Image (cartoon, rainbow, N blue to C red; front, side, top):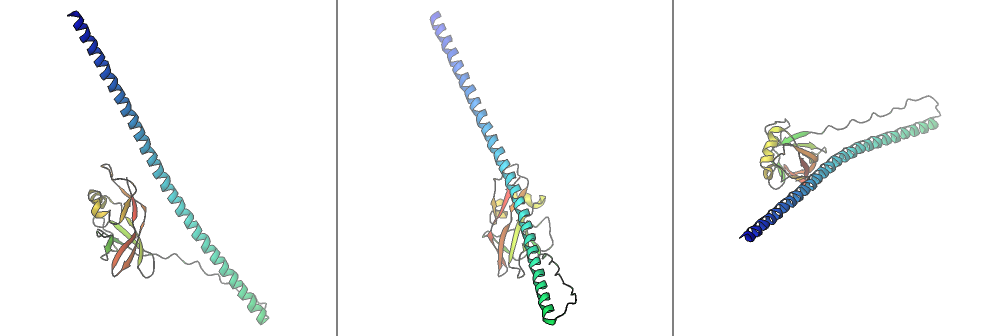
Amino acid sequence: MEAAVIVFVITWVFFWFNIRGRKIEFQTSLAEKQKKLDEVLAYNTRLWKENKQLRADYDELKEQQNTLIDLIDESESIEKLKALLFESEEEEGSYEEQKIVIPEKSKPKIYQTFYFLVPNKNGTFSDSNNTAFNAARHMYQFTILNEQGTKARFKFINHELTTKDALTDPQRYLRPVCTYENAITARSKQIITVEEGWADKEDNIWTVTQKAMIHFD
């Protein structure tokens, strides 16, 4: 009888330590996986911020490049005017000082801006646009890029009222004209346009040629 009790106690103790060991091993494994997940999320966040900064740097360099091109064009125009002036003086034998007129730098064109609410399922917008922004109705801002009014870039308007609707039904409001940089989560509150989309107009229909890239924050 005593031997049976001893065997039972030993068996129970062994079983208890075995279960406890597996529990500790499981908790340790779970903690390590959670740590790795946190590291991956932190790495992704850091990459997104770096990507955002690179885009900002690229836009700034592009603007500087355009300014430099304008200055070069302006300089070439001045040199051409000087050459014409000198040729005229030689032909007429006149040494009278003449005033060189430097053309004013052309002002950047202000493109028309207008707004849309819901895109069509096939990635188009009907030409029922409005030039006055309405926070309760409009989700997308379009900017005309040429004099003919047939090319435009567009972005999502991150406003509390329309953003809430878009997050509730992304298949209707976002998917036809946007690509996602990350996934929507229950904590998503904002929709940031990372890269504007492009669209062409034909027969009063705007067709998206390149979807906008958005980030859920």
